[in-house]
Image (cartoon, rainbow, N blue to C red):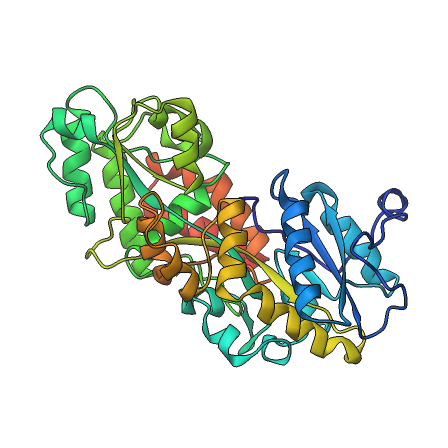
Length: 411
């Protein structure tokens, strides 16, 4: 899944504005009057089938809601921010937008609270952890659209060769299993602390000890919970149970190495299932919940969302009708499954529970923790993790966390 967008209300460069000046809604039976019967939907392309998938939803919605027209515009992820910013600046913000960070828009009063454009039934169906991630100052603005969480992928053949009977559920069990596998000559656990996603690996470990990165009001990296987790990460590295040089290891190539059967365990995504099926279908592997200090479930979660802009109050009823229609179980599950993601709703998880490849990920959805993207200092914190967390091998964990916290505080 594409990384969550971080969108600020900043002026576009002239060249960017010119590049998208011709963009507009159309193609889905627009009545052209911009009135209450017409709502505009701006979305990114997740796959080659995204446009057709949305067109199918719109066709069914319009058939069930006579008098309401939905005008669809699909953009690449590379162009999405620029298109949105240009529309906002020209007073033509989409009525519904599928993107990433929402806090800047909510803070400017540009968005409807979720409760104003969806029924209680729709809102209450979201996984609690995902709904909380869509909240600013106690008000939910975003509608979680697609989810991704991390789970433990483990090589069953390497487990058997090392005498490891079951996937670990605690840190101590993870260390012991990795130690046995490493003794056979293959790294037991892959720990990617390079610049690609050091922040992701860190949050998986921190959340496994009840920690996180803070919230919308304060970045909290240098905490007792996080320090204890970082110390255990250091123990894994110092004990020789990870791959060499974790600080220079990027997640994507590391997962490729796992798919080749050359690492015992890694944290990976639902999409990794498809990658393995394509690259090495004979790999004998399993998927398990993320091991934590006590065994209680916790993992890293990532989500994109829908949000509704306040344009014409006469459109509020039509937007509400669309949100309720789209998030109805059958419609939503079909959309999510077709795009290959996880659902953010409770009913969606229940409907997809029979999918053996996804069952572990679905079980972990309620325990997901998120990056504090609503905090203005998050971008700086994110960069600090990517540049500094890899020093864990050579520095004391306390010193590394203090440096990251200092960067966050300065922001």
